[in-house]
Image 1 (cartoon, rainbow, N blue to C red):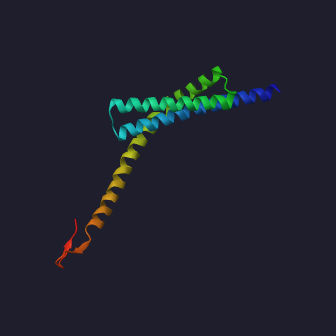
Image 2 (cartoon, rainbow, N blue to C red):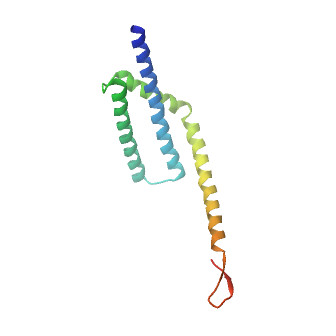
Image 3 (cartoon, one colour):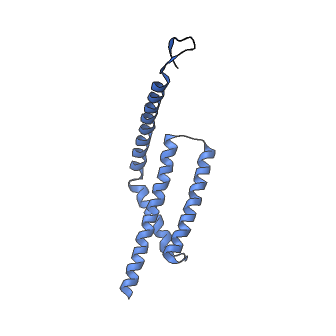
Length: 136
């Protein structure tokens, strides 16, 4: 009986650590977006407020699912530990790699899109007087 209780509590701690890592990953995605598409202080502030509102709702849902709504100290410590471990280990690499990847993808997509638009716009049409002309 005690072993089951300890196993259950350990599982809850591991879930909260994972939750902290996920919260940090979501914020890193926001950081990547900010690097790829720079925007002003107002937009950054609004994004931060929306992020913390989302994380508050997610934390509340996690508290209800894991602890039946009770706030336990290990939940907060686990989430902070997970976010801190992620931030000090691989966060910089993830943000750098994500920034490089997302900067290249839009350029590639935009080039393909512009090429397809040019091909469609250069179709030869007949003018009103019957002569052939290129459409721009």
